Length: 239
Image (cartoon, rainbow, N blue to C red; front, side, top):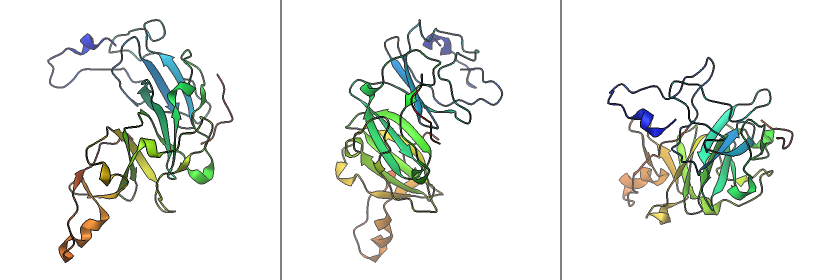
């Protein structure tokens, strides 16, 4: 939808998309005609296509859109992101495994296809919980169900091909799981990367586990603000 269609003074907002029964909004991105979009499904399939007028024609706000990607039974869309030159597709499972793959491993094709595999999923390593496009200098936040957050450099995640399982990102144990991932731009406090953080359920702030020792004379750690976070195997590549 053209951006000027959203030029409205209404304080209550305006309709951006007409959702059908059983459907939900996964992502919204600002793009131009030169952009490519990457869609990733919950079962690890993916499709890349152009966001130009020929492939993805402009439509009004109060419309349901066109098919971006098809799915096998039991699958659904997990994430959408815009492709950036020199970037990587980072995929993470709820079992604590992750990998990054050069975005150039995805060729641009038409929309409405089953796509190709973005990550090889096995039961022991969990289901796909996040997929995003990031640069090597970016940071990745992983948030677990027990409130622990880790932050790591994208460059520290091993680069592998599309049809691979990835490596360990976070030790979540048997009773917890990663529930969300988010990308952050590289900050100035790079020495603090890879620290584990704990989320305060009341304030929403995150602190390092060593904060508990501040009252005993140890040097207090710095409280950082929790980033906002956004939110099983296929049988091969198929278009």
